[in-house]
Image (tube, rainbow, N blue to C red; front, side, top):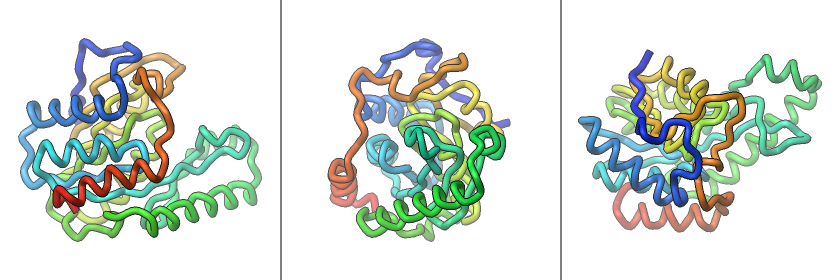
Length: 231
C-alpha cells in the first residue's frame, strides 16, 4: 500500500476550492513542500487534469505530457462510466458494474469504440499528446481534477507503468476515500488534499465554481505550458 497524503483539515468537507486553478495551485504547493522528487514528469489527464498539471509542472520545474484517457460511458448516463480506455488502446472495465447495468456485449463494444474515437480526436487536437520516451526512469505524477470511481486514474497509471517509470504518484485535489484506497494499492503514493468518505461522491462538490472544460480552454492551458517549455 502506497502512502496517502492529505490535507487533514479538508477531510469530508465540500466546496473547499474556488475552481480548478485554485485547486491546482494548492495541490502543486503541497507536492513541492511535502515530497522531495527527483526527475519528475507530470502526466495530466485531459480535460479536467490539465489545469492542475500545468501548475504542478511549473511549480516543480518539470516536464509535462498528456495522458489521454476516456471513460467508457453508460449509454443512458454519459456522466457515469463502467471503465476506461487509455491512449495506447488498452481497456479497463469494472466487470461487476457491467454486469449490474445489464448491457449487452454489443453495447459494451460500441461504448468502447466511441471512447477510442474520442481519444483519437484529442490526439489530433491537443499538443503534448505524443507518448513520452522520458517516462522511463522518471517519477511520473499522474493528475486529474478528482477521483470518483478511480478507473480513469487506474487506466492512466497502468499505461504509464508499461513504459518503466522510476515511480508513480497519483495527485488530485479531491477524491472518494474508496477510490483513494484503491489507487493507493498500485502506486508509490497518493496525494489527495480533500478526501471524502460516504457512499455518495461527486468531484464537482469540492469546487465552488465548476463547469466542464471545453477543448478551447484546454488548448489555452496547453499553449501556456508550451510557452513555458514544459513539452
